[in-house]
Image (tube, rainbow, N blue to C red; front, side):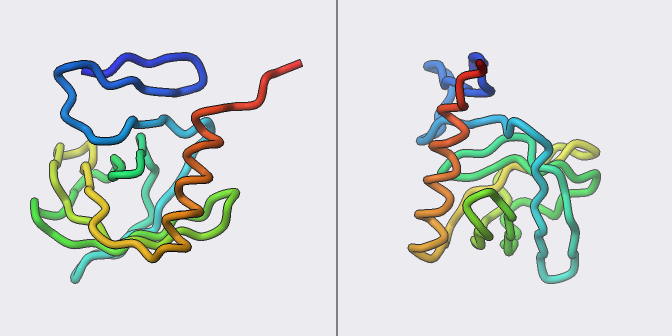
Length: 121
């Protein structure tokens, strides 16, 4: 279970086994992704250092490895991920399994910005 706080920050409760907190992007965020036989651009539902939820009507099977590309305010972020959960007609939860050091640094900076949105006014 997760509790949503202002700014899109999601806090894990004791029932959530995630290693990292998840964030809802403040604006529509899209990821280009591909597996061996699929290539799509899909909306990101939520994300954290360990993975993300990608909205897609027909996710690939569990265990499928995919290549990800996120275009963020910090620059492009590339990663390899494994499909860990699927919800038909909704999307898939993926775990990041490989990422270059510079991509990981950009991803961490971007997530830090998402967790500390600028104060209005």
